[in-house]
Structure formats: structure tokens, C-alpha cells
Length: 203
Image (cartoon, rainbow, N blue to C red; front, side, top):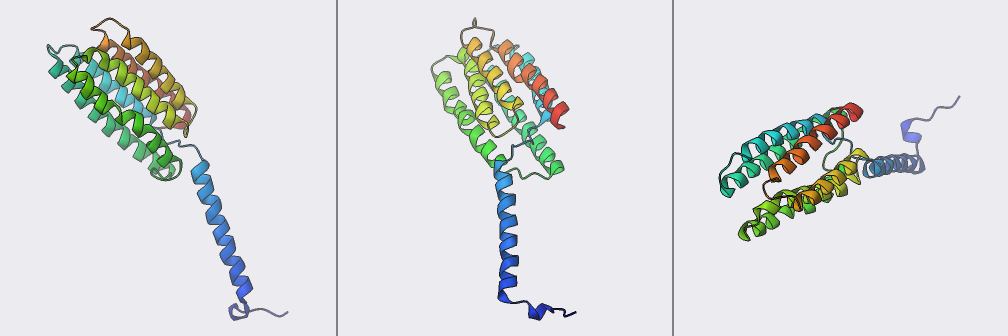
């Protein structure tokens, strides 16, 4: 039987091998871009909820709006750190790329509504309408979660809808009920949905 050595392989054989590799690379990239982002943190969401409950309790004891806003500003930073670390750890365990494919779409969809809260907060502060901030924050966060949830599991946009509903109620609630709305939203909703995600998708 005649055996072909590697030197007997012509350019056509090599071209077919290169084409097969290109096809596999294209298939893998297509799957990465089309797959849902499943590294949404479950226990990280629970942690964010627990910290929000603590912040709500502390904020309710503040005697002026400066201290109140400072408490929630620090809580926002704490939540960002908890969420970011939880996402990275969950993605690493599942060997999922965080900043490519569905992960990048998730982040880019989440950021615009979330970042809109910065100028709106400044505007409300200058107008002396701090009592409207909880409703606005909950609405914007809910919108961010819904848009980002388009590239994630179904539970995520459902959570966003709940945040938007609660934010709408908070806008028309009596003055002084903002911390309760924040505790229900950033606290209870995060804990409830975080536990659900952890149970269904792990971590």
C-alpha cells in the first residue's frame, strides 16, 4: 500500500485544512455572539441586596439630605464592586468571556440607562427634589436590567420589570417613603431574584 508522506501533500490538501480551521473558528465566534450571557451573579445579587438593606437602615437615620445622599452614593459603589467581582468569578468558573460576545452586549446595554442616573441625580439635587431620587434610580436601574437582560436568561428582564414597577410607585408615594422603596427594590428584589438565579444557574 502506498503511503503519502507529509511532503506528498499538495497545496489543495493544505488549503482544505486551513478552510476547516476557519470554519471552526467562525462557528465558535457565532456561538459566542449568539449565546445568552449566563454569568449574571446569583449570590452576588444576594450580597448586593443585603448591603442595600443596611444602607436603607442607615439612610433613614440621616438628619439631612447631604448625609442621605452620601449613604446611597457609597452603597452604589459597594454594589458595583460586589456585582463586578461576582460576575468575574462566575464567568471564570464557567470559562465564559465577560467582555466579548453576549457579555459585551450585556454590559453595553446596561450602561446607558444606568449612567443616565448621574446627571439626573445632579439635576434633582440642584432642584431640591431629592424625594424623587429613589423612584428615578429604581426606574433607570430597571430599564438597564431589562435592556441588558435581552442578552441573558429570562429571569433577568423580569427582575427589571419589577424594578420599573416599584420605581413608578415610588415616584408618587408620600415623601419620606423613599428608603422603604429602596429597601424593597435594591434590597428585597436583589435578594429574591439573586437566590432564584443562584438556584437555577448556580453562583
